[in-house]
Image 1 (cartoon, rainbow over the protein chains, first blue to last red):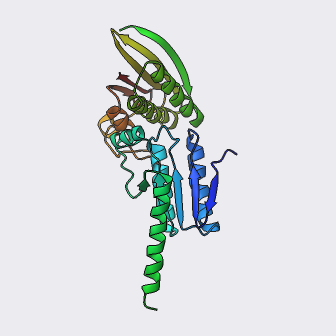
Image 2 (image 1 turned 180 degrees about the vertical axis):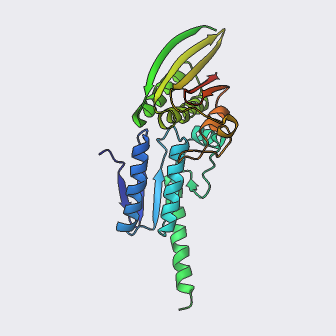
Image 3 (image 1 turned 135 degrees about the vertical axis):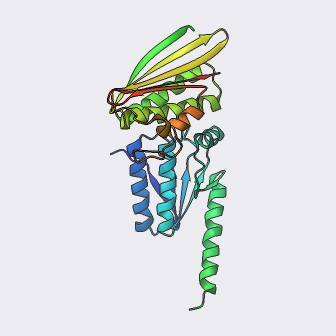
Length: 129
Length: 134
């Protein structure tokens, strides 16, 4: 079956969507990512959509679902690289991707995830037993 | 208004939705649409094609290139023989859905188009026509 590859980078998972996804492929990615967060004990998901030329309400919902499922599994999600034309269209469509963190590119996305992780670690250390 | 190109694409599966997106994209590029205009029309096409497949039980899209003097446009007509829409005002409302989606398909497609027209007869089917001009 056709699948979008998920790569592991330390405690993060990296997904680069490089094809025009049909609906089933998007659903498969959502399921695969959720499973990999658990099996890889991942703390973050970096989703690169810079090659996506269309994000319609279905794909938008899939992105929102991934972020929500990851959050429930104690992992943060950052969507990076959205094309400007896609951002304009998404907002006009009525989809602001609430609850989804975004960054302009992969470097900033990684920095965001790392900051978040070290903040959590500090928080844990300071918590009374 | 002269129609200079006309094609019909079948819409039955989610792969057909992808094919329709790609076909509309190529047509918009050939007509000299800018990237934002292309993306808006392709996204509207994707929403309506999914409605045809999911709610209409499949159907087709009629794609036309329009020339009106120096203006260039693309018109898309989605037809199905599905169960139709019983309450149009409700169906056009943001966030209303009978499926599992976000309910942005029709209202979103309207916002992304320059022209929008919908006709539906319960039990007979639905026809949605949109156009975007450059």
